[in-house]
Image (cartoon, rainbow, N blue to C red; front, side, top):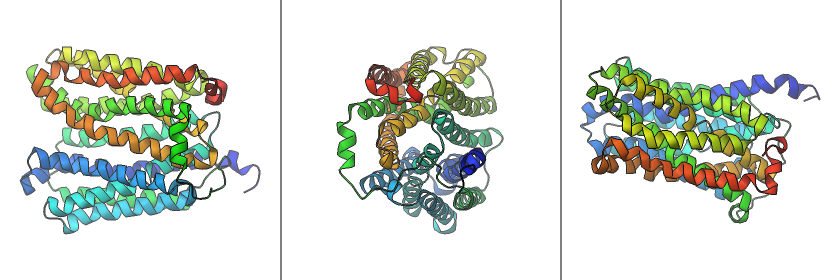
Length: 406
């Protein structure tokens, strides 16, 4: 690679990386589109349907924690780890329609899918960090934005009629993930800001736990994750119920759910551009304040005009994920460079572990206090995140983020 190559290859590489990660991570959300068909064919109850999603979350957490413990994201060539992980996730997904006739085989395969994806999402962020410096917020924001739009796609599919035969859908998801892995292998490499591979050091986890600035950043991320996945998981059902009370077709509720979640893609991209100019902590605090306020207010519009409900939900969807990339960008700037992949993987594993509780928490709250107040409990996370990021902004270490902008 000569001196001019990084400037010439940077954005083509990052755009291919975003596409490859979107294609690979689509295996995570593919189950959302086929749950109705699986429910009919496998006679699934609420618990079975929930486990089709929860098993992926658990697999991701296990894979991410294992990768963190052994520093895999920093000790294995990022392009190779990304590609192999994507191909294995594709294989696990393809095996479900090939061999599974019920949850007995499907759930372990979904678990493996999540475990392999731990080598895709955090590793993709690490690769992005090696190509970006002054514009790191934009780079990682692009990556998170692409994944957000991908997560919304099943809701658009359901709104347009859903799936009659679920097997081709999973085969398609597997094929796209394999394509993403091959794109990563052939066209994506680490950039000029990569650090030499470190020696194995399991003690680095303890080092992260003792670093006050990294702890504050991770607390901000946990506050964000407390809200994000529970919102994504249950806002479609909230909108469906609200639209039904207003006498509006479920098709429109599905379209609204797609738009609400997909709005986060634009939020991530714009927040990334803004964070590189005015500071990560400022953007994160603003996003958390907006999303937390929406969580408190949206239940009061349940059953009201669908236009009003959708408008507030769109603001929530825009803000709820806008700050996500900035926590990752901040960790990449505050940690030891040679352990960037490990630090990012640890952060995501802790966040996804927390989502297991908050996703489970909403249905009992709906039964207890109704949709009018169930989402209000999600505002606890943004409140914690605002405190953590405000504390980080006052720290001298804030000068290390966003080119000194904090």
